[in-house]
Image (cartoon, rainbow, N blue to C red; front, side, top):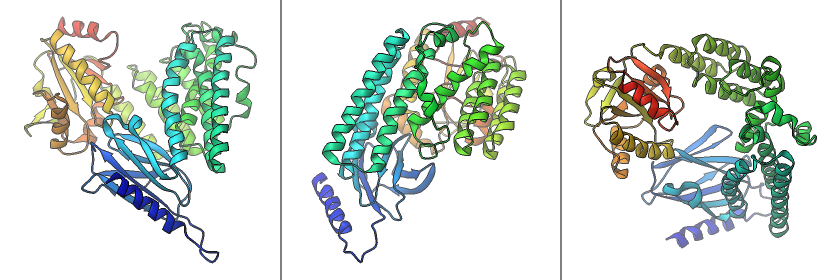
Length: 473
């Protein structure tokens, strides 16, 4: 059957590409695929965060879709909680096959446009492994580190030259491929001071070779073409965090980097405001850093100062509303305060007020199918904790906006199902009240139904110590 589908795509390509001199220029492409172990009955196709269409899978978990009036470039297809990028150009007839249990690693393309997209997916997987290696390299001295990452970059350039000589790809492909190489290299250098074991980050920066950051002179901080590109955005986050260390050092002469410092985070928002003019890039960065700070802060005065700075700089009305709500929720979730009342639905379809489920030391954790790896890892961790701390009640809450049976089926399929599983009844309102961000957020509640810790993490080194404190209160 796979050969039959591939044949159809080849046939479509041959028919679709036939044109004489009087025919209009081809401005469409085909995308199709097969998904093994699907977690939904559709994929979502988008470009630059704008959804193009929701494409249904057929009875065999396959689909075929024609994109008319193609705007060539990077597209995103999403399925369940996973996504991947593809490059589509006119006359492409791209087919992919993947298994959701091993999403990126199983992804393979065929058809016209396959070579360039297989190049990108292989590069993506190699970069994941490379980043682990880079973190180890960051413990080396600056000169040694620079030589190693220069060598990695040169190897990639030669590999791209070999691919180019063999397949003669388009200028668009080369533009993206070169950007991938450049910004991956730049990212490696920007992450160096943060990953290096030394705590005095300013001292580390001063020890680097003079030409270590020379490439910064060529950076376009408002590159609209790359604005939705993962490696570009990751580079910007570390680059801006790195540069902010210098302005932060003017306020904090001990130069001991603390990502939770209000001063440092305000300096970073100010830097973004001064360097970036592209609204989409600027608003995304402001939102990312603001919510990242707030999600870890328990100081109401500092939270409000950070919120004020964010509101003064962003142009996103949606972002302003969401950030204000999140800050208000964070400020209400204080130690010693009553846990807010939200309604949960059990897997027997019974509705409970969350407070009615608490009669002793309790841990509230959250999960979503969208964050599949966290979903699996958290349940293995919780299983371990339940054995070690039988006096604690562990309640797991699903925050996905779909029916109860889907959540139950996913749990049962992994052997995770137990009696303390619930879903939020009113998901949007409950998420606002409990401020569920990031997904690792965990709330500790005392037996008197008051909050002991509004934002911890079951994977943190201090979590078991916090549990013992909860038990002994």
